[in-house]
Amino acid sequence: MLSANQAKDVWNRAVEQTRRRSPASFEQWFSGVQLEAFDDGRLALTARDEFVRDWVKAHFLPDLLANLHQLLGVEGASELEVSWQISGELNRPICNTVTRSSSTHPPPPSERRTRPPDGGPSARVERRSERPRLLSSARAQLIASLNPKYTFANFVVGPSNELAHAASFASAGGGGPRYNPLFIAGGTGLGKTHLMHAIAHKVLDERPEARVVYVSAERFTNEFIEALQHHAMDEFRARYRTDCDLLLLDDIQFLAGREQTQEEFFHTFNALREADRPIVVTSDKYPHQLQRMPERLVSRFTSGLVADIQVPQLETRVAIVRKKAQLEGIPLSDEVAVLLAQSVRSNVRELEGALIRLAAKSSLTGRLIDVEFTKGEIAMVSSTRPDVMSVEDIQRAVCSHFRLSNAELLSKDRHKSVAFARQVAMYLCRQRLKCSFPELGRAFGNRDHTTVMSAVRRVEALRQRDPQVNAHLEAIEQKLAGSDD
Ligand code: ADP
Ligand code: MG
Image (tube, rainbow, N blue to C red):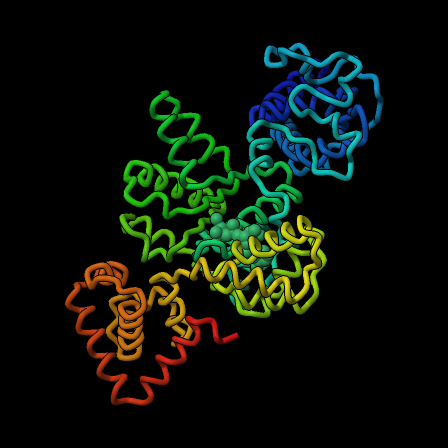
C-alpha cells in the first residue's frame, strides 16, 4: 500500500515525465483534465468533455500509465484501473494554461471554450468531424503549407506512377513494405509534390500526434542559413532531427553544389534513419544524375527505394483531366477530355493549366466547352509553345524500352545489352537535343566526351545497316513523340 504522500509523489513525477515529451501540447490538453483519485490500484480522472477524454486516452494515457507503472514497479498496464468522468466545471485542472506566461493574450472568457489562444483542444468541441485541433505552431504551419486538394483520393494511378504511388502510400502507413528512404524521381509537373502532400495529409488524418515535416530543399537551405546567422542551430536540428517523425523533402536537386547544406542534410538523414523515422525525398532527376551532389548522399538516396514517375499514357491523362474537371466543377464531355489529353502529353501541370484556361475562357465568352472550341484553343496554345524535351526524358524512354533501370543505364556496366541501350540514349540525345559531347558525358554518369562521340558514331552506322537497330530506334522515337498513344 502507498501512503497518500507517496501516491502524490509518484503521480507528480509521472505527470512531469509525460509532460517532458511534448510540453506545449501536454499543457493544452491537460488543462482539460483533472485528477480525482490515484492510489496503487486506481486512477480516476475527469475530462472537460468527451473529446478531451478521447484525445488524452489515445495520445497521452499510454505514456502516463507506463511512467506510473515504472515508478510503482508494476509490470503491465492492466494493473491500474482507469476511470473517467465528464464535467464542464473543472476547478483543479492538471495544467492551468491561462496563467502560463506564453498565453499573453487569452481570449475573453466567453470565447474560451470555442477559441483557445493557440489551438487548444476545446475548439474541437464544435467541429468534431474535422481534423483534430492543431496543437503547435509547427503543425499549423505544416497544414497551411499543404494543398488540401493534393490527397491520395485525388491522385490518379496509372502505369506511369503506380510504384511511386504505392510506395508513398506505404510510407504514410497505408500498408505494404515501407522503404526508407523513399526517393521519388520524375520530371516537372508529374505529381511528385502531390504525392508528398498526400502522405502528409494521410498521416495527419490518422495519427494527428505525428510530427510531420514537409519542406522544400530550398526552404531547408534558407532555414539552415538563417539558423547559422542567428546561432539557432539547436532549434534547427531539433526541428529536423529530434522533433521529426516523418521528413518529406521536396526537390532535393536544389541542394546541388550547396556543400554546407548538403553536409547538414547528410547528418539529418542519418539521425532520422538511425531512429527508423521515414524520409521521403523527391527530385527531378535520378540520384545518379544529381550533379554536384556528394557520393555519400547519392548512395544514401539509393539505399531504400527509388521510384520514378514517368510521363502518363493517354488513358491516365484522360482520367486526370476528368478528375480535375470534377474537382473544379467544370462540365466536360469525354470527347473534350480525350482531346485535351492528346494535346498536352508530357506534363500534368500543363494539362491542368490547359483545362483551367479552357474553363476560364468559356465562362468569359459564354461559349460551351465543346470539341470545336477546344480544338481552337489547343491550336492557339500549341503553335506558341513547343514541348521541351530533356536528357532525362530520353533516358527514361530508353530505359522503359529496354526494361532497364536508370541506375543501370548510368552505371559502369559494360554488359552488351546495357552498353547498347546507353549508346542508343546518347545518340538520341545528340540527335534531338543537340547537346555537346562533354555535356552528354556528364549527363551519362560522368563519362569522357570521347566515349560519347564514339557511341553516337557507332549507333549512326548501325542504324544504316542493321534493320533491327533501326526498329529499336523508331520504337523509342515514337515513344518520345507520344505516338504510343
Ligand atoms: P511535380 O512536383 O512533380 O513538379 P506536382 O505534384 O506539382 O508536380 O503536380 C503538378 C500538377 O499535376 C498538380 O496540380 C497535381 O495535382 C497534378 N497531377 C500530377 N499527377 C497527377 C495524378 N496522377 N493525378 C492527379 N493529379 C496529378
Ligand atoms: Mg514539385
